[in-house]
Length: 486
Image 1 (cartoon, rainbow, N blue to C red):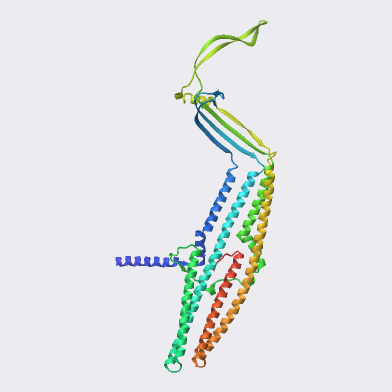
Image 2: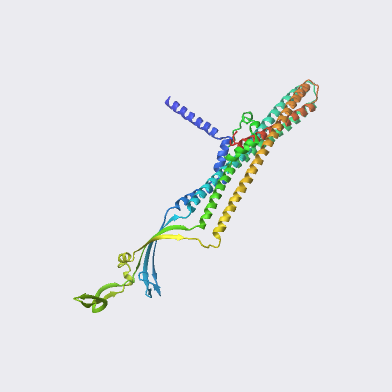
């Protein structure tokens, strides 16, 4: 019993896993969009640009801190050169080392660094909204391909219904032919119609397969990967009434929620700060500096002793008992010796300590004449600002035109859909009457097939206009800021 219980639990887990895998292979519109945005090349490129912009923001923050640098060198000199420890010319070979620590601190530059920080921040936000715009474009593209798949599936359903009706007619006609009530020609005509209907089904299935392939390519999914589209019920797709999607109101909403408009506004702010930044080049800048340094060379002489030569008078004198006496100083000659090449490090620490130097101060930089570069930079910044403003005006105008055009197209699609709906209803009545007349022996097969084909064409026309209307309404909802969803 325990073994059977374990086997039962294992089987249950296995089938549960299969069921979960089956569910995971279902792809609705939202999952397609999420996968496409994660794997799209344009999105990846936009993400890289956003990361670069974020690094630029970080750079403008760090540049406000002091700049500290340390350098040291170690080398040898030949021929006529300057001894770094005495600053005198020498012709002997020597080994030398130097070390320097420098600090530079910006104090006042008319807000240039703050402007740089603001400019980088606005640019970074604009790049992020650009990535949002790319994602929205991808969403619209994926929605188009997804609706094509749904429409192709509906065409398959229509073709299957057509075949079912034709088979029923063929069965009815065959019975009457066998009973001698109808000629064999009627059955042959319906069989020919069945063949045409079957061909239409094959074409619809091929169109569906092609639409699925296009959808997989649009989301950058491997063609060999399992893929099953989650077809929504067409009558369950939520659509806002066209009366609530007035183009003027949509345009005002889109100005604040569309990424292209937000990016343009941010770039205008960046251009305004750039104009202020360019004006800082006209004014002086103030900074503080400091440095520590030392030198060493192996040519420094070593003191080994001293020889007393005598005394020599000095210009000074002292007065004792109203008598002036000259002051003499001892004359001593130091005994030194040159360091050998192998004694490079002998006295290294002593020299570094003796040659240690320090400096600090304030630096004032006053622009007087710089070939007009500051003025040209200021004029260029103003022109760039004007360019971004014109770009925003053009983008807003294009957005307004697109919204009004989409609303007009949606209205036309709704009218066409209503017209095709009436055509389907009329064709359905005609087909029903033709079927009854045919079954009563009052009409021929050609009239029945003609009415049936008219009904199929009417349904296909209604299907095309219906999905065109759905897409137009979804496009208007997108401009309203609701995104793309079915």
